[in-house]
Length: 143
Image (cartoon, rainbow, N blue to C red; front, side):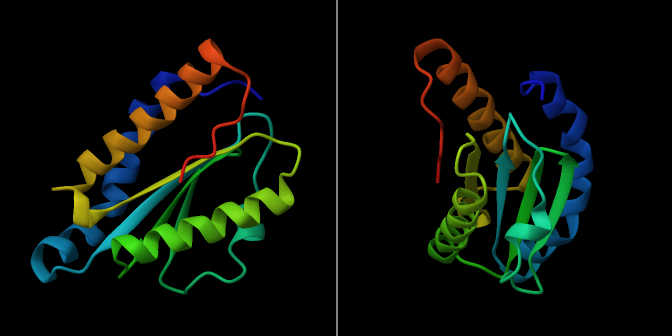
């Protein structure tokens, strides 16, 4: 697997933003919160179906590459989104025991719009792997 490339963020930004339009509209108009999580495993393919056995029907995932996907947790507050992300992380740890992966989530309660949310997620992903490459070889499991 090749490492995460900064250019990929731009490649996927519009695709994900368009996907989030409905959630953003409902958040702005009706104050229905949502959260998005990014999952990236640089050394392996991920099978999102494997990790979503207990997911809610309203939660959706967007597969971007074989080792990169987003999850949208609908109708969820910040605390519940942290729990949902922790559950996803635990599932990943069980199936990717010997592999490094990255996971991070943010809630719409903390951001003005989905574009800002995505910028933060991609920046966090980029910084995580840049920091790892420069400072240590320890995995980055961000929640």
